[in-house]
Image (cartoon, rainbow over all chains, first blue to last red; front, side, top):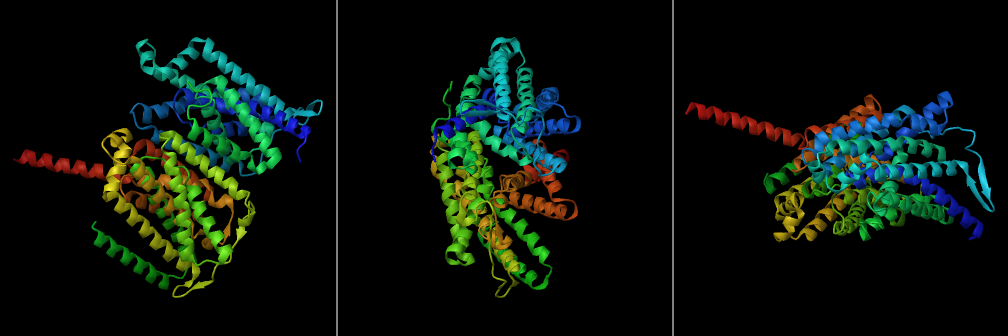
Length: 290
Length: 324
């Protein structure tokens, strides 16, 4: 059963998958890791992004990634509005975060059922010239439908990393994560900084959605699998460390791909949640915890 | 309500349920009532951990499904009677609850909730891959066609679920008014402070998670006979997670009355919506109502009524003050 070729191929597929998981997890890494807002609805927004890309692709034949990038402003605004609602209803009143969690759970449910009503339970997929092809390196095949999402995901991660560490606003976001009160003393408004960060996190969902539907067909209930993956990656990556998120995403991708190859694809999903449960139980501060 | 009064009311309800089942012949009503009563059990069970203790559990489907699958195994292994299925389902789900309780040692707040969500998915994967219980395809079961005294078996299941609902409510009400309930409320308000005051927090949390889990398993145990076909997708449905937390939130999560109000209102509304509109749209309604309540009326309907009553009392007092 075990062969080197199979192993190498599974490993490569895992690394590629990991790059894509990073793109999905970025939103959670920022909203949950940095802002302490458990945005359970992020994966369903990724789903929403995927369906918007699907619509553009099937109606106008638009390139999926281009469509994903085009919709980022919409998701930015949606994120800002969602944070505004969250802030006004929960954060400002100092209400316990648990009610916020229920709020996001409700949003998740509404968006998921909305997608279900609009698009049904059928699997949807996008078409582009390059999706069927693959790149061959010796015995290892790198299909473009995985390679492009991986490159795009890693690029998105790098962009966000540069933004957070190099720009004024990025540093303000890291500042609000460390000490919102001190930020206020510096004359900045934590609410506006957090809203910007949340909106950015939400904007990544549009691109991640484009990558998701490129990798394989989607259906509305799929977002639940990604809740586990994204939170596992965020916790393992050390709650908001962008570099850690990438490393954790790659590890999870490899673990899932190896499990799927050698034990069957049905077990793939259990890996992420198993990793999450283990990480939470044994080392909640993650591998790269602050 | 005193214990004796509660038992009297419960006995009356059970007898009334039995008498109704002699008169009413349309099977649909029993199906609908069964589902609503099942939600009463689930909402009440959820509330023991979520409402009294403040630990939000997204894993209701895991416990419910464990109860259902325990019944499936018992039926397949030895054709066990319903009573044994109930005991088995509750016991296995209660054990899982105990495990979850130990998880709270490390995980508080948001992390606990995410872990319960993860638990449901891991368990679902296990059952998808377990061929004995039908795997992903599911398994058909043959239930007895009739039950003595009741005629059609669904009428009997309705009566069983009625008794289970009363039992669950009774347990919740007892916990709420005993020292356990006060301890749980202390944990909800401030766990560290409670621990410092000598409240045995771990032991109480273990009681809460075990009882809550066992009651959810109890709700799931008759499910195989009710639907006669069990597959992972239907018993691990996210609807159970949403409904079992939406119902107490809407009814009011600090008293045992809240989950009943929420379950009856929301459950009935969903049954009506499923018949008249569509089953997807009624889920949308649940989501919207949940979000609206969580934002606008976090204390639920019971909280709203209490607030109104307090205001009226205040008005009366004010009026008296002016008079004298």
